[in-house]
Amino acid sequence: MEQNDSPGFYTPVGSRRTFFRWVTAAASSLIGLGLAVPLVGYVVSPAFRRREQRWVDVGREADLPVGEPKQLEHVTTLRDGWMETKSQKAVWAVKQTDGSITVFSPICTHLGCGYRWEQSDRTFKCPCHRSVFDVDGKVMAGPAPRPLDVLPAKVEEGRLFVIYKEYKAGLSRAQEI
Image (tube, rainbow, N blue to C red):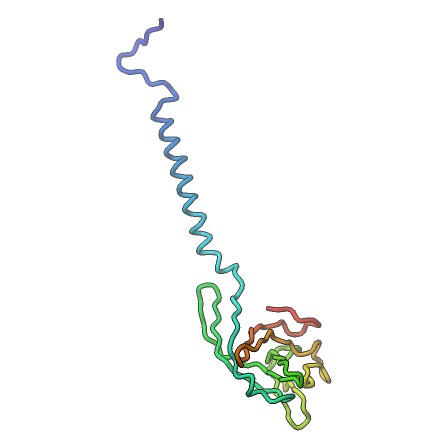
């Protein structure tokens, strides 16, 4: 049997104290990581979430004349991340002879200007670059690359509901922003 020449206690290199320090540090790191991941996800996730799109009541279906476009205004709440804003929007609605309703985005497909309905020649006209659209939204003249953008619409209990969407201007096919 080997004897230790120095008086007092002898502590081996891999002591119990070192082991418990290592286990405590590992457990603390694991707990910290477990708490940090959900916290970071909670803070960062709104930046990756798309805008929530809701059905918005824009008016009574009975108020729409057949074959005549009518501009309908509404206030919508946009939620983008943590920010919530109210915005006044308008859409153009046309009631067809079969009773269906087509709702157009109010933005010209050429460069994003607002257009208006000209009753005298029964066309939508964009004042910016002279694009002209018929009552069905088809391009009749001008530089517009595609017909007017149609928005999702439905009628429930006599009320017209629309999901307001924005599309990129200047493209030959509709692409949502």
